[in-house]
Length: 302
Image (cartoon, rainbow, N blue to C red):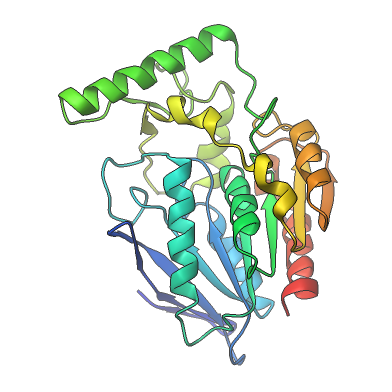
């Protein structure tokens, strides 16, 4: 499916990761030969259609190509079980996305920047640490791993999450199908992975386009892998500039661990906003944070 405006053209540009087709869009700014390119993907359990096209259009209007993709098992990509959140698979999808982008003739393959939000904010930190050819990155409200990085949850919630994770592994082994739990807690609904009681409302009202259906369920095995993913451990290897934006009142990706990871990155630029995790998605905060991102890419990617 192609889309064209006065400022950009968007075309399909799918790729394979671990033998699975990942759906992607390539935005090309009008009138610019071999533009720098920003590679983008969403955070925990989200699709490329959720808010990110607004970011991509702003970046394309600023003169950048944008490569925006869905992880395997999500959105328009192939893969089973559906909605499976696995940070190690996600990072592998990012690696294959970068290989694909570097094969494209329509963009400047020596000028690649990364953009990630929440869980994928941690992914771009991981990628920058291992790929010295990346020119710069934006880590927006990133999950960085390490002590204190997880959303606030009581012991009972953690035990229940671990139980559901084990049940999912058994179901997959014996029944060949996943055991699903809610990602975000629906009002009056069953147990959900996110402890934040407002996350369902925030996701459905601030991230998901009107009219788009959303299956809130995810395979529960993420509860067994979540704590083993720690981008902060590699942050001191990063040599490129990284803009880290965070909210002081963010309980999904708390500020303290973000300060620690920024201290490990020699060329980190931090930007503090007095807001919560989902407040970046609307209004003046969206406009201001996105404008800051575009300015950062102009300084380091052009």
